[in-house]
Image (cartoon, rainbow, N blue to C red; front, top):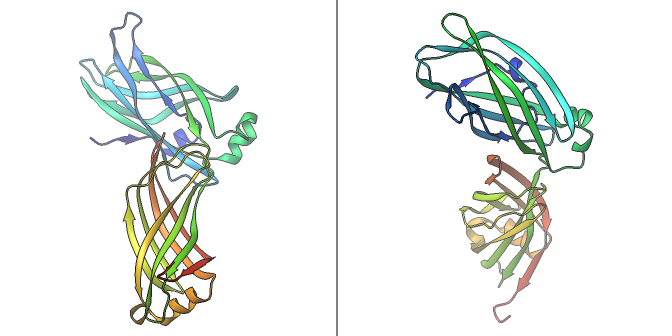
Length: 291
């Protein structure tokens, strides 16, 4: 099913900080209304240190025997204790929902933290903020009669503070011109105040500009708020094949090591992909076979 998306000019402010879950459109007796509005999904797409895009997918169910068109919406949004924004918008092209059917409608919202901090004082030192939205969506039937369906959602949303990955060190056993057994160790750092749950890590490791390892890991533990995890990669290197530059770099530490890759992780707002690329002078501990 195709998800209809409101043009960004209609939703640049709509739900700008809204991370809600709820249902609208039920009668006081608990029976289904002619039109139901249900929040199916909320997610965060491609967060950066400057801001993020929130995407909210609403299932709009038309339980009547006639087509209904979404023509207007209004709302009041409260973030924390601040009355953040009030808005009423008429759609240039109403969205039609056929009789006895449902249609998902997506609200992609891109906003900057600068604007949020300027308008919500308590946002500055928070890792996540609560919010409430109260309003309504107005529909027109085939005779142009209006029906406003109240909506009310509450929830929270994150402040994204970044992600970091780097090289911790290399342990080299029996380092000779011919080769060595090494163990490379890297670290992943969660700079956010919320937990990240790794799904898949892809990585490449280069020393002195030469690729020595690449792979995928799917067994990493959760990254707690402002926490970190390390992972190690055992390798058997042949310097005749890889190049003498790698031997010289390991034999004269710290070695120039480049770590590249991407972490796919889950958090409370869906899935995110975090890329990294860092070159560091990395310590090398040399050991002999007898130690």
